Structures are given as structure tokens and as C-alpha cells.
Length: 333
Image: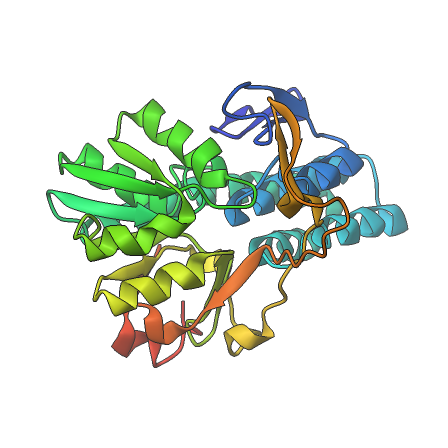
């Protein structure tokens, strides 16, 4: 059994361990998520998150389970893993890819997906870094780094690559409400990498754009429709509208596994709605805080859809797709 190590996931001695992203940044706790029920719970509770990493983690879980289970039981677990979260298409893509294999080869295929994801991240970083100039001031939203992939990340991987090339830059990090992935995770990753950053609340971005403190936007995607519309963490659409108004380049970054050719447009992408308590308050290493009436009605979609018309270019592992290229569709990626 090989050993695999990434920022947010480890495989050793036929056990899968996840860095609990709900405990960061206060605590670095590794959770044993080898058993499918634990993995499903970890995916649903965002202990593991990021479209590519969810796919990698679920694939490894199913691959290990297939070593000792077959038939209806294996099918039940595959279906349960596939349904753990509805929006990030990498999860369905990874499980379907394994299901097309014989049970005895599923683990090998899962290991291949892990290694592929590392290579995809490197390719996106190389392509995307060409869009970053020395001195750029970049806004990002949510977390799209090593905690969201098996490699260096998608959008944050692009920023990291540019930084390692010697380009001076500064990153403005949206806190990303209601679960604060920007504040808890992206800020933690940037600090580890030594990349200069400033944490801001989500409603500050437009003002900073107007002041000239931001000149580019890079962020990830959880599902990209065939026409280039894409779903990403709630708040992305607002960032896109603000960037468009201020005439700033807006770049989503995603691997080919995030592109869903079965969705013609963003209107067909299912949007996950999460529990209301995430908006009524917050929980973390500090405990639980409630700031709203206990029964306050809540609408809590986890993602929104950004139309392709607001996209300057889509960065993928296959290259950069500008507006002219996006109009031809993404079926050939």
C-alpha cells in the first residue's frame, strides 16, 4: 500500500486521515476518515472541502472499501459517497470514474486521481501565473489552495506559482461568510507560504476596488457549465459584478474535472442549501456564538452562479480560455 501526503489528506497503512478544516486555524487535528460513514460526514460537515479534494478523498475511500466489499454493498457505499454534496461535480466525476473499473482496480484508479490532481494544479499554476504581473494586488474569495486539492491549489496555486517566480504581489482575502473559509483557511495558507495578504470582510471588496487597491481577481470554481457559467462559494457573483463595474480582470481557475458538459448553462447546476444555524451564528475553537433570534428564518445557499459574460478568462490545466474561446463551449476540454 503506497503512502500519499498532501496538505489536507494523508494515506498510510490503508488508512485515510483528513486535516479537519473545521478546526483550523486554531488546531491542526487529523481525522481518521477511512470508514465511508465517517468520510460522508466529513464531506457534509466541511471537515474536508474544496471540489478537487472532495473528489480525491471520496475516491480513496471507495477504493479502499472495494478491497473487501463487492456487489450491492459496494454499490450502496458508492451511491452514498456520490450524494454527499450536490454542487461540486468533482465528487460525482471521481466516483463515476471508479465505478467504471473492476472492484479490484478501484484503489489503483483512486491513487491515479490523487497523482493527477497534483499535476493538474501545477499546470493551472503555470498557465495562470502568466496573467499575474509584478506588483499586482489580487482579490480572492473562499479557499482554493492546498486545502482544496491534493496539490498546490487552483486559484491560490496560481498566486503561489507567481510568488515563487519572484513576482511581488499582495492578496486581499475575503473572509467568506458564513463559514469563513477565507479567514480561517486562506489566511492560514498564505501565512504558511509567506505571501503578503490582508484579510477583509466580504462587504469591503467594492470599496477597495474603487480605491484602486485591487487590480485583479482570482478564485476557484466548484462546477463549470459547458457555456462557461460557473458555481462557486456564495458571494462569488457579487465579486464578479463589482469587478465588472470597476473594469478589473476576473479569472476563475478550475481543472477539467470541474467542467460538467452535461450542464448546458449555470441554470442547470444544483445549488446546495445548508443548515440555518450557519447564518444565525458561528461555531469554532472559541465555542458557539449566536447573534440572531433562535427561530429567525434563514436562506443559506452554499454557492451562487456567475454568468460567463462576467468572466475575463477561465484558467484550466489545458490552458487559458478567453471570452472568444468560451463562446465556442468547453466540450473539448
